[in-house]
Amino acid sequence: MTQQNSSNIDTPKFDRADSRVRHDTGLAGAYRGFVDRVRSGDLGMLPVIIGLILISVVFTLLNPVFIKPNNLVNLLFDAASVGLISLGVICVLLLGEIDLSIGSMSGLSSALIGVLWVNAGFALPIAILASVLTGVVVGAIYSFLRNRFDMPSFVATLSGLLALLGMQLYILGPTGSINLPFTSSLVRFGQIMIMPEWLSYLAALTPGVLIVLGAIRSNKSRVAANLTSTGMSVPLLKAGVLTVCLLFAVFYLEQGRGVPWMFGVFVLFVVALDYALTRTKWGRSMFAVGGNAEAARRSGINVQQIRTSAFIVCCTFASLGGVFAAARLASASQQAGTGDVNLNAIAAAVIGGTSLFGGRGSAWSALLGVLVIMAISNGLTLLNLSSSLRYMITGAVLAIAVIVDSLARKSRASHGRA
Image 1 (cartoon, rainbow, N blue to C red):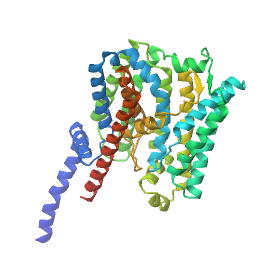
Image 2 (image 1 turned 90 degrees about the horizontal axis):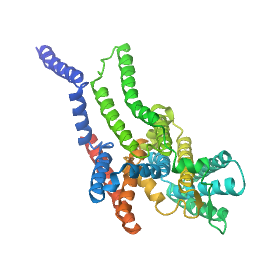
Image 3 (image 1 turned 90 degrees about the vertical axis):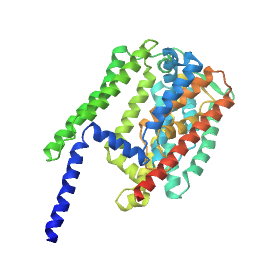
Image 4 (image 1 turned 180 degrees about the horizontal axis):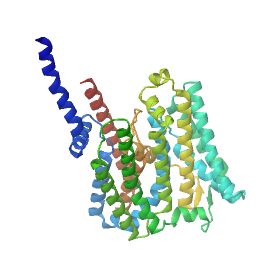
């Protein structure tokens, strides 16, 4: 009798669970999964998207020039250099580390461009390569100090900030500034080069096509493995919404100058890093080390090598950001990389959703975060507010982002215990 009752009890549970699995593959299931993730504290990029919309609405109401196509094009030009630096910051933040010298690294990189290319007469590609290799060397030094002497990255990179700034001032010499040829390809890239209209629209269509193709390939793999197909309703909805938004964005920007090549190259770097973080063994190791370094070490991951790669990638992107900044400003000066560059790059990564506590983040954080930061900076400039107010407001936004991240982290922890 006991066995019969047990069978009668267990069977409905199995049927209900199986029905729920089949049902959750559709739009209703995707919605319930999204709600569950939000309740558990996994907000993803939802806060930054809502924040970007609110910022745009507020600044447009205060000054309609903000939403004009050409102003948005200028915003994208300005976002590329800081975005590249932020992209590198994401790698060290994923490990729970920090790099405070990214601004000075970008400033030294721009100074090297001016000294080697303009003053010494080296070819532009050689000057750019030297700048990037400098970033690689600096990143290797930081990782050596972290791995060999267990020096906190905060201290190592703070020392590097001062050293790199000193090197920047030294190589620029008493003049302190080097103007780059305005007619050069580098300066035109940073100030006036726009993507062809057909290429912009093609780029806008590509993400949606890739989402659909990826879903088809995933379903085929599941069917081949005798697993239930997840269906196509959710991927098609995602692809449709994303494609409509991107096509409208391109259409609107084309009413002005169009989509800058500078921003397009930045997005390509975002896509490349996103692929590396989500589709490669290196990327999985990055998240594992950031989540729990000791557990990652015991599972066979070389933690020191992962740290080394993260610091090298961070400093390399900071160097590239310096090259982009030199192109945008058409000069290499003592002011390059100073001011709010550090704040904006780190703030962009954190505001975009990368956790300061390690183990959680995305390359797309840099893209969304830098759009928020540049939108705030651009909007406040249009309102003719002083730089002091801009610093305070940007700092407040960063503080809010960290508070949201901390609360979400506590919510996930309590949800996991429950």
